[in-house]
Length: 426
Image (tube, rainbow, N blue to C red; front, side):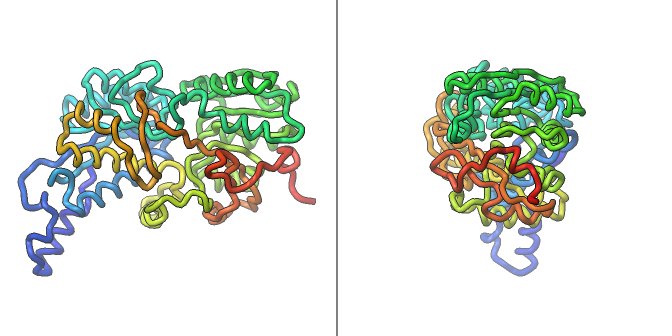
């Protein structure tokens, strides 16, 4: 378990030592009020740890910022968290302990659809507001009225997730006629590939390959060879980090010569896989949530990234912070704004307020619809272009992760065919 003690104690000691007036100390330092405790399970080990650690650092920065301004309702904020080990089976027990034993005031989710779905029954039974971090259509089957999630999928998450990928494919001339769809046998890939299947059908694309692979697959060359044998124009992949890296490597090894390749490939957004795969990413079209393109300059996000990277370097956490960190910070901005506006920790009041309000955050303006998804979708599709070698610094530059969809944030055009982009220059 971890606690975010924040900077408040240091700030108070420093202020007293320098003779500053007591009034300059955060309000909670002058009261005996118990801290407001926000609990979560989060991946600090296992396959999702890179994103979990990045999200936790962003939340810790938010807690520091809030505590430096006097906390919430005049009370210090503490984060209480447990490592879910990237394993959904650990999640129900973590949330039962957070709520029943630790008596936290509020709960938020860790990273990923599988973890969110695993926590939902416990959170619903306790009738807690549940701010969640990147759950793809996770509330479609629960229909829980106090659920809100930070992945900008829009009202119809299953359909919206792959919509931009298919639209980008249709921009090619001549238009593609066939598609291969592949994903791991897990919650997120199942939802993502189902949406891709529907979008492909609506676009008139013939599905020539449609398979899943076991969750613990480590050898992907055979999967890619089977896809190659079906001779598709386009390949859509839905995968978690280890699989995404395996698929990109296998595509280069086998020499997959298609017009467009990519999909909901989780992990490619992280610094770890960017530096590992380097130029092998050229041409890959991947879903993302933030890219350092001139079309994505939300107020406060660049200052946040500067602070985040300074701490990330010390802690050995994802040094880029593009994918999950801004929206993890924004998640707690929303929760904090709701607490202050309602002057309450009552879950019913907080849920009503969040449903009715549009929030200004470092991730842009965010409003939720009735199932807790974003009212306006903002899934980005980026294409890796001009990557040279494995230097991580190049990914901080504009023009390397070009936004090709949606038009509102578009910063460049899709380059194709993928097979030619994948080959080294003569």
